[in-house]
Amino acid sequence: MQEEVRGADEKTLEKYTHIISTLPKKKSWANDQYKYQGFWYNGLLLNAVMSVQDNFKARLSNFLVASSPRSGTTWLKALVFALLNRGIITDALSSLNASNPHECVPFLEIQLYTNDRIPDLDALPPPRLFATHIPYSSLPESVKSSNCRLEPISLEEVFELYCKGVSTHGPVWEHVSEYWKVSLERPDNVLFLKYEEMKRDPVLHLKRLAGFLGRPFSEEEEKEGVVEEILRICSFEHLKNLEVNKVGVLETARGGIENRTFFRSGKVGDWGGCLTPENVRRLERVVEEKVSGSDGLSFFGGSGDQNGLSHSGVCSAS
Ligand SMILES: Nc1ncnc2c1ncn2[C@@H]1O[C@H](COP(=O)(O)OS(=O)(=O)O)[C@@H](OP(=O)(O)O)[C@H]1O
Image 1 (tube, helix red, strand yellow):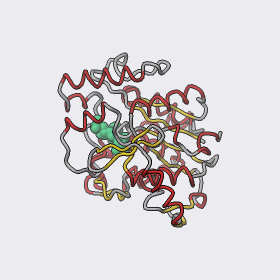
Image 2 (cartoon, helix red, strand yellow):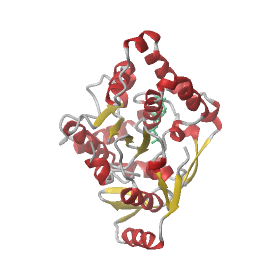
Image 3 (cartoon, protein in one colour):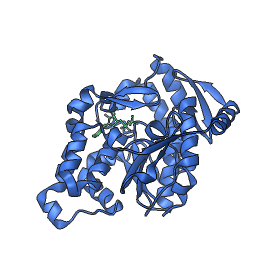
Image 4 (cartoon, helix red, strand yellow):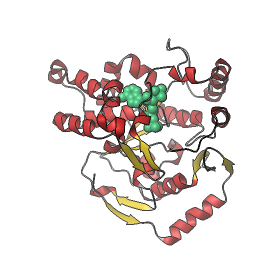
């Protein structure tokens, strides 16, 4: 993707530095985290978030994959990319075979508006497809109104911070609840997907997603097996075993992230095995308590999945 880029001016950068200096701050991971509009970010990321808020203008031809970190973003990016480019399925296939899904669908705040760069995204041909981990309430107004690399830190410390909501773009329960609520209020604009449900019935949810994107499958496509082919090329096994995802590196403002880190086990509930049973119960309690006010949203149980922390990804069309 090639876009014109300009740099942020000194005055704006001073404004961001000043805002950050006034925010609540907590030590976390390698760097300080700042609480901005109710969510936690490191300073570098926060500059980019403010720049997205100031500069990104949603257009009718935009699709935005919005998700909490580690919720299934990579899979959803691959699926949306393949769906929107399936008229030229061989091109989509070769792009996904040659590039990590994060290169096919870049993050606004992690890849595009970083290092004080302001890209001219209007210059890109439609459909313009981007991604973000920014919570709903902090998205630029035009989106809402239009139709690590880390220093070593112990798992116990990370877990404590996570339970207190201090994780990048956290608290995770606020992040998910906001998108859940807006998906109920504006179902034509925001589609809410749960990782566990997509794993259980990928065909059903891929068809829902295709319909939402305005590109439902035709009878002919279904007969030709296009649904299964898209699921195959976007599957965990296929993407994980590609050369680009074994050895490639994704360049971001925080430095390079090895592509292989986006593909861990891809199994529902596997996260539970990384924690003590006591901590699994504690996290379940914390999250359930926090989302209990959100109309029918549930993270655990009800799905038949053991320890199913319901990852969720949202695709928002503006
Ligand atoms: N294609 C595909 N299909 C199914 N699952 C997949 C796929 N790609 C990645 N994964 C799993 O998604 C988890 C990572 O979440 P994210 O992609 O949101 O991570 S990130 O925020 O972009 O870093 C992480 O889950 P865990 O395995 O439970 O850690 C990945 O393994």
